[in-house]
Length: 83
Image 1 (cartoon, helix red, strand yellow):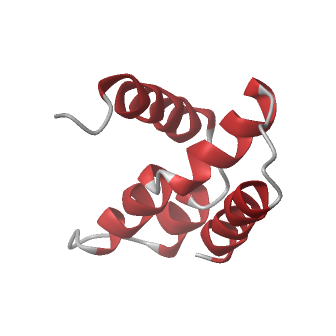
Image 2 (cartoon, one colour):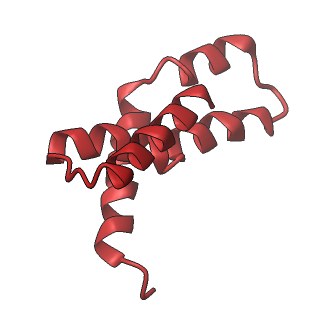
């Protein structure tokens, strides 16, 4: 949640400073602001047999969750607001 708030703050600074980020800068922040990683971690809480070990793994930024965040964010950006 803390990373999400910091990422939103970075996006708002870009907007107010009229800054156009590079693709690398954008993807670093955009994958966090999409909140897919956060929702993945939170979804584990709804499962019955969730252990502390699973939650520690999910919040350690594993590559599979980061890859899913990138894919979902790019799909969201491509579709745009008309859908």
